[in-house]
Image 1 (cartoon, rainbow, N blue to C red):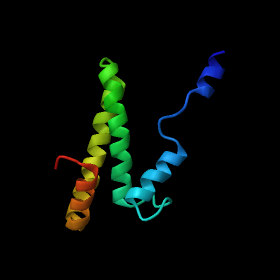
Image 2 (cartoon, rainbow, N blue to C red):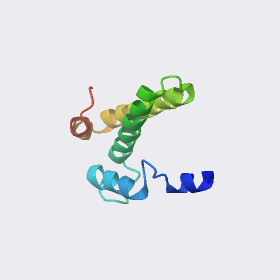
Image 3 (cartoon, rainbow, N blue to C red):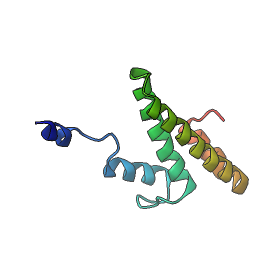
Image 4 (cartoon, helix red, strand yellow):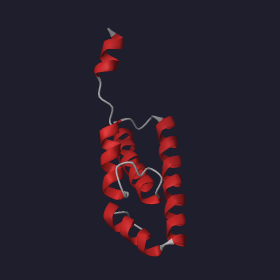
Length: 99
């Protein structure tokens, strides 16, 4: 019974959603390596974990994962800012980040 419930439960981030994010923010749906597409994927995952932590505030492992993910996104944003300021400003504007 438990196995059946796990199979039926839908994941929050499936292949189609990833392809949609990569197509919107990257060059194509298979562009997984560009900084913009990675930043957009991290932002989507951060938003999901933030909602999870609002309901489950004692989940310390997820809180740590969220902190690490925010740090990775920050490092990518710093890299993009150093390399190409126009691409940095565009991704910050498109995602609505506060920086």
